[in-house]
Image (cartoon, rainbow, N blue to C red; front, side, top):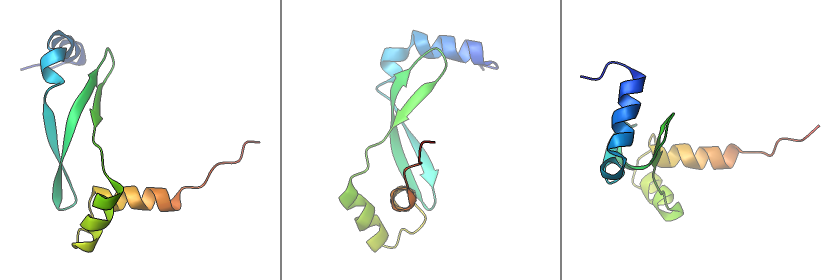
Length: 85
């Protein structure tokens, strides 16, 4: 069992090619979402998921009111540019 960040990083980088073919299921709200590993570097692992705009509304219309789609929709709705100054 790996018990420190350096060993975890070293193993991730050693097996980078194979790991980038893997995906991770992450529960958010009542659903599980599949994220793929899109990058492995010296400091972090990058996870990626594409969410189509149609999927956002399909999920909401089907009653998923606490999932990733709702979080993304709310973020976009609430976003305002910060003024430089």
